[in-house]
Structure formats: C-alpha cells, structure tokens
Image 1 (spheres, rainbow, N blue to C red):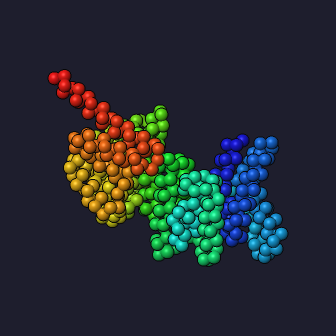
Image 2: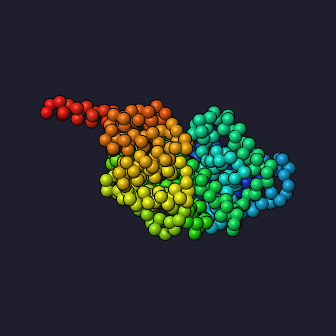
Image 3: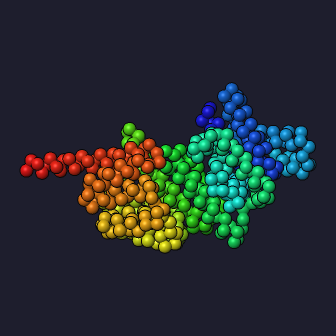
Length: 411
C-alpha cells in the first residue's frame, strides 16, 4: 500500500499544487492542501484500499480542503467558482490539458531569474518534485529550518515581485529557457555526484521529458535529456561491492543501462549539434557507445570539446578538454592544455583538476609524482567516496612501482 501511495504522490503532487496555485495564487495553501491529501491517503488507503483513480482522489481531497480554507477566509467568489469548475474537470487529465500546462507554468515560475540559482533548484525540488524539505536541506548541507526559511523567502519574493505564473513566449521563452535548463542540470548533478541522492537525478530526467513533450522543437531541451540518459546509464556500474567509486576504465560496461543509451542516441539523432548541451551529449554518447576506454573515439571527443570551449568557455570545460586531448594526442599535449586551464587560478585546489594532472602524469610515466598528486587531490576531495577512490589510485601506482622495482632487482 505504501508503494501505491508513493506512486500516486509522485505523479499527482505537482499537478495538484500547480492547479491550486493557478487558481488561488497562494503557494502555501496549495502545498498544504496537497500534503493534507497525501496524509489522509496514508490514513485511509491501508484500511479501505487504494481508489481506482488515486490521482483523482488526491485532487478531489486537496480541492475540497482548499475550498474549506478559502471559505473560512472569506476569499472572493471568483476563486471559489474556479475551484468548483475544477471539480467538474477530469481529475487525471491528459498532457494536452490545462493541469499539465499548470506544471509547465510552475517550472518557469520556480526557475525565474529574479531568484538566486540555489533558490530556484530548492523551489523546484520542493514544489514540482515534492521532495521533503529535510532531504533538500541535506543536499545543500544546511539545517531543515534554514531551508524552510529559504523556501519561504523565495515564494514571498515571487508574490512581492509580481512574478507572473505563466510560460513565456517568443523572445522571452528563448531568454528564460536556458535558466530552466541550468536548474535541471544542477538538479541532475545533485543526484549524480558521488554523495548525491539518485532520486534527484531521476527527477531531473522526468522534468526534462516533460519539457520535451510540452515545448517540442527546442533542441537544447532534447540534448539535455539525452545527456542525462547517457550519464545516468552508468549508475549501477559506478561503485564496487564495497561501495567505492570506480573510474570509467574499471567499470563493467555490461552493467550499463543499454535501454537508456539507445533512448539517448535516438533523441540525439534528431537534435542539432550547435548548442552546449548538444555538444556535451555527443561527448557522452562517445563514451556510452565505446566497448572500452581504449576503443573510445578520443579524437572526436577532443574535437567536440574544442567546439564547446569556443561557444561555452569555462574552467571546467577547459579541464575536460585537456584530459580529452591527453587521451587523443598523448599526455604531453594534455598536460600543456591543463597548465593553460589552471593558469588563471580558477582551478586551484579543485580536486578534479589535481586528479587530471595525476592521471596524465601517470600516463607520461612518472608514477611517483602521479601518486603524490592523487593523494593531494584526495586531501581536498568533496566527499568520502571520492577521497577513497583517489587514494586507491595512488595505492595502485605504488604497487605497480614496487613490482617494477622488484623485477629490476631480480635481474
């Protein structure tokens, strides 16, 4: 029964909240009524059984609760009348109908550029994905009370600034869409990181699919979805039996999700290649379709990174470009580009930059320095799984060096 309630809440929560926000303009009321409907389901369904239409049941309960609260507050007749009309509508609408449009409006409202990026991500998680505030707080490394205040401030700012509850059109859509995609990218990253919560990555994929369905023809939306699918396809192979992170060359590629990869390739085949997410997706596709690290088309990846660095320059892109060139054209080329990327200081003490130098140094033949660099990267790693993985690389280089030394001594 708990599974039935969880499934219903995942699908229905955002639709209920979105519909009630549209009608009442009250975020707190909408969330409270949706949450009360879920609480009542937890109380009744185990005893009475799940209804035939769980989403419709939850919508009806939430709507009736909103009517009661609005009536007690003497809210204007118009809002009560609109809620009454909602009672006559199909409680489980198809994607072409208004309640699904409500969800899209809610995404763009949560991701309005007037809000700080962290607030947009948190508000998206809470309002659209229904993630508990406590879980969001853990992801952002703050207390639940702190996150509650941040969410309240974000909703207050939406109300005070008069941020419209709508999907922009034309030029405004083109201007706002990158911000929405940036939030989804950050949401996915929160789930994909070594110490992240996989459910966040799942939600990012779900929302990207929703955007693709509701605003078709946007190449970067499709590209972002394909990128998510390629990256997430490796989720079951990224750790060993002890829970330690495995680098790409040590992962069992038979455990990669081939259905997700095929889906991503199909989406990418119909996507233009000129946007930053499209270029990242093509890089991810090269990795996803390679039988091994050695069989990877590194020259193609290096070329994609050259284009990405041209249209979307950043220190992290330059770092990844250096690694790609190191595998495509040799470690000397990679180390030279890495030195350029680190020259400005933006990558100082960034663990992945130090780890990249360690890997390229090892491939250049200096195992002693490479091991020291892996340990340096471990000392500034952001999470315990990353720290252990880096120390394992250092220990592995030490073992190889010891074995070579013993071989020389026995000759």
